Length: 320
Image 1 (tube, rainbow, N blue to C red):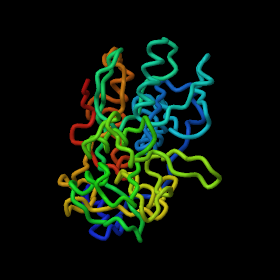
Image 2: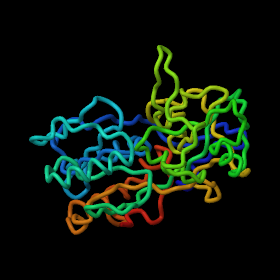
Image 3: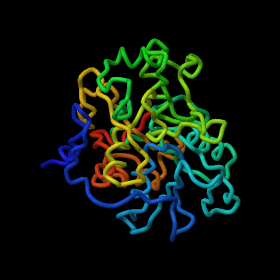
Image 4: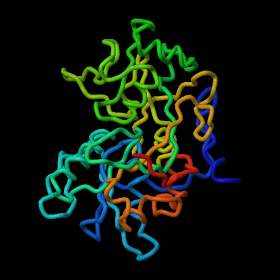
């Protein structure tokens, strides 16, 4: 059986079939020696579960842990271990991570060296590079007794997110700064400036007020709500390789194609990345960590698949 066949699952009824995904759970913020780590990363909730354990693997050349990956959600601040970097606001999401990297570069404080991202390249100042490392897919999720069908066309999904579905239904998107939010808005033909009033990124809280929708958290669903959900995250949560937040969520089928990771026909396939400064692409440490198929990240194929992601045949490729 090849590595790709180990991620079978989520067929028409979207019951999960997982073969040899392996044991283990995701690590949280980096702890232990060395501190500080040479390469500190923040950002995407989608990829933190896989990048955290990758960062805890020592580099093969010197048996040192050079990378440290901090969760998207947790304490208000992170402490990277460097002088002056003990109260860095914790970035939640791909955009927030990218912006934190840019802020650190502009300040010259050396607090953050890379950003996890589930969204693709955009123009920035200073210039950045997106280093590919894995493949994910995004479908929609609903409850088992949802009033929203578990089989929809992409046109149907787009209509729901453009307020053309049943008015009793509430389409949800993750919090601002989420890469999955940006991907899903594009998938349904929207932008941040054209989000219609029926689409919500918060839900009413039990004690009053509202609670932001965190990406890949199915616990916000009820029988009239729909939310985008990473296939890799779904696999990883259901198999208990990381904190299970899927609740009652079941993945939907778009255009008749079951949301099976590595099925190239899945409408929501996407690549995921680590963002690094363009000025550092000639730096041996960054090269060893992120650039090319033999980089540290790309060599961790067993961890990548264990956490539900697919192998990217062009892992380590840089895109500005």
